[in-house]
Amino acid sequence: MTHWIKQIGLSQPALRIPETEKCDYIRTVDFSEIPDRIKIGDQLFIYAVGHQYLYAHLEVLSIPFEGHPEEFASGARNKDYPWLLLCRNLDKGFSDQWFERKINLLESARQYHNETGKLVTSPGAANLNGLMAGNSYIGLQPEFAQYLLQKMSKL
Image (cartoon, rainbow, N blue to C red; front, side, top):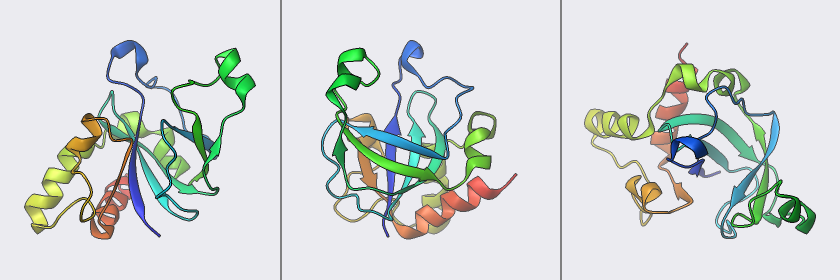
């Protein structure tokens, strides 16, 4: 199993994830390009880029598939993000309170690195600033993933 950071939403205020939005138990996650490195059983930390907070922790249940053309034609899906993964929410309690919890991803990464001196992202992967540079998802070191899970589990 591999852990990934996947960004969703945009930084412009009108395009941010609404602060009241909750992540469903089962949901799809959209990608602009086929997420061919992500496998069934991998876990995604969903990052609400506009707020800079973690939004959800999901497990991948499917291989990548394309959205249905009718969804794009109706505007139900963004044509710029045609690839999907079906996922299940591993921590509904956290995702229902994500905005109140305010776990800042970049701040968490700095704290982790300062405390341990260890890398946050997988060898050869972009660092977390790569999310700001347009990378849709980035692999994480297992130890940093555990660090995030511990932060998410604290009430």
